[in-house]
Length: 255
Image (tube, rainbow, N blue to C red; front, side, top):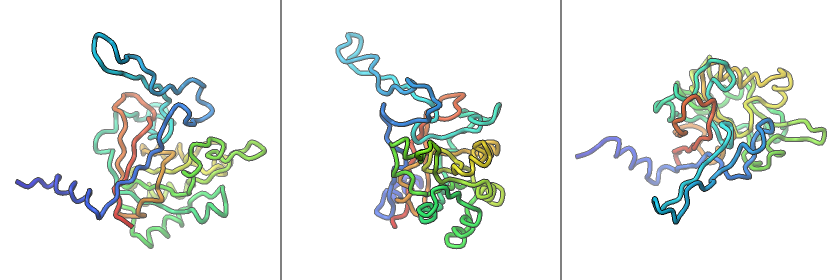
């Protein structure tokens, strides 16, 4: 007998495609936002060890904030009373992936915020962003992991300086197109200059107020085709979470 889904999987594992890890590896020294209290991360603590008469095995505990490393944010992270993790099920873990590359512009301006015109230029080359897409922003910022000061772009005066999204770009992918989620390599959705102007993370607040999802601190976006790939995201099924570390990977046509 022939089973269609098994055949599709065999094709995806063929030499035509690559499977690309898009999450950063985490350990007890991995950085996290300074507003999170010290002691919030304790990974791999042994609570049941070898030599126990009850059962010969080892069990560990893992303590971490929801917004830690490569992570997914649910609307309730910024919007009181909005949807939390349990409202997003199995159909929310796989997306068509579009990667917007603005590395050249970021090299000239560390504060660069992707614009709606950048998205239109992408579409002129690769076609319209499809319904339900995950739109990721490639800035080259993943290279700065795991240096927290570098990720934040901390200057001598203590200011933060990094690229990101603008509100008009997000409105384009969500209101002109019907994207399902967005992602980026930086710690925040908003380019630092945009956040400073708004005195808030207005871009992130917009995304989550729309009931959309986002994944932050992504990795290896430069190893994925700009269009035609699939993104798969998996997180623990923990109820009432505002966000969680997430395992993200892409199946991409070989370049």
